[in-house]
Length: 472
Image 1 (cartoon, rainbow, N blue to C red):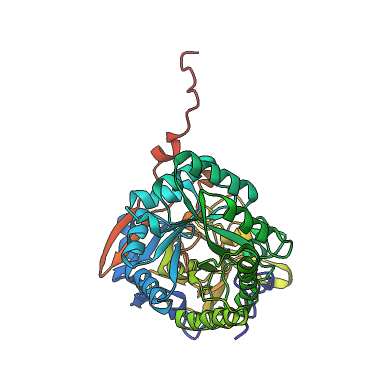
Image 2: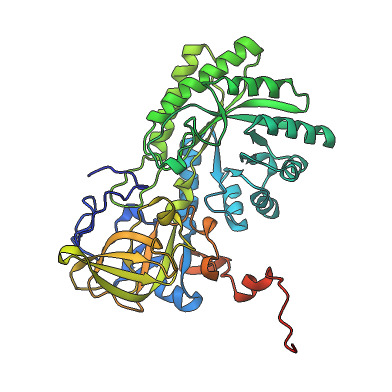
């Protein structure tokens, strides 16, 4: 297997055979189990999730639609909670959040990471325990800080000197004490796309350890009476497949812990290692299991703490997309199939679906790779490399760069794309005044709308322009 990162498709050449990593399928109707939620199966060619046929779901609810496998989501949450039993595991609200998800996260014993007042409002509406909430963000407003302090969130991760001053002032004015972690950048180049690498020096997040800003931030937080310094937060990126970057980051972060003990007289009780663990979007991806990750990270921290004669702090991780990403797929309806002849007689077939970059911007944003399958029937025709594209007025409106589907794919067919639980619905837009799709949870043969499809009334509700004077 050739290991190339999911965020790069520059290797995809203009040919009818697809990129080198895309295997020719023995059976174009078959699913690759590692790409799909646990209940996904095909019966007579029809894809079922949670015992619900996608043909029936589309007939009842239309397309495009996000299909959320409740059992799979809970299973993945439980697997991380069990593997990291001595840690606090934080679910990434930014990946996908709604009140139902917040309730599931609470029921599975996980904590919740939010990074905006809106995400915090969802948590509050769901009745999520606020002491289990962490509040991220590089530019929290005063209103958001007031909201967090008033609700009593468990920790606020500060990201700038301005925010330290701002939060201290807010807490003082409210007569409260805010529990704080300081976000640091360890200078680690995680093997990921530059847009989702978050620990290199030249980016917007955190305080640099190398320049001394991180130590100064610890000193300033410790000096504020209304702030309780709990520890350090380090996050090196997203869609990460190994722990090598964490090992380098842990060395630098725990050295900073030791310096705070020696020079400030503070032995901080908490350390958040971040996370951003990868999932399989295509056959080229090979993610680690929660047990493997827990074993490796715990060893790294124990060794570094022993080296610095530190007590092992209470640890936290943030698995990111690894919980919700594989638990959801998107189902589309094919509208057109267009063969396009390229130089040298090569033909690329464009399969246009009824969604696109308004429900999955990741391919257009940073070239993320996805897979797809024909979801409504079996086919005996030979496989054909296609490019699944959306309906928006952008040539970069691509859902799946290259995928084998049956060569008789036609208008009216259903195409399903796995691994769309993270950063798809949460980054969806109304580009071209598209209506954002619903999220439908499925379990044991039944379905439930957890986020309804937008309507034209929703779309027009915020448009308060003056109507034309029909009498003029």
